[in-house]
Length: 107
Image (tube, rainbow, N blue to C red; front, side):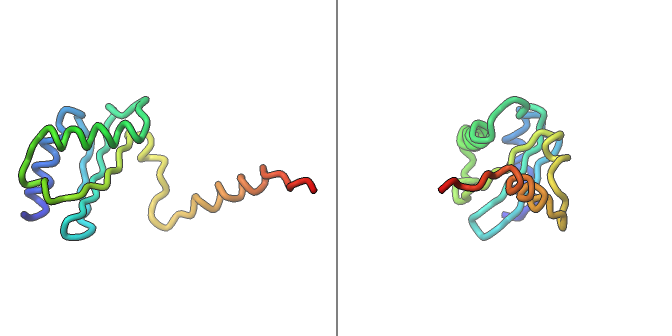
């Protein structure tokens, strides 16, 4: 099965979320990364989002998806816009803030 067929199946599975975007990244032969961007995730924890996506795939009972293991990314459009783009080192700035707020241990 090629990437276009997989994308079509997965977009159909997640259509109830009215996603703004669904991307599939084939990491290995049987490992798929799936990023879903939807306003439906507003106010839902990440673990609940992943559970919801997994439940939707299982409910589909698509034999074509059975051999795959999924790695989910589930964002609202606002969250996606705040993610650093490739090459940005936003982690460094958060590390600095954490170092500055840390207190030394008392003997």
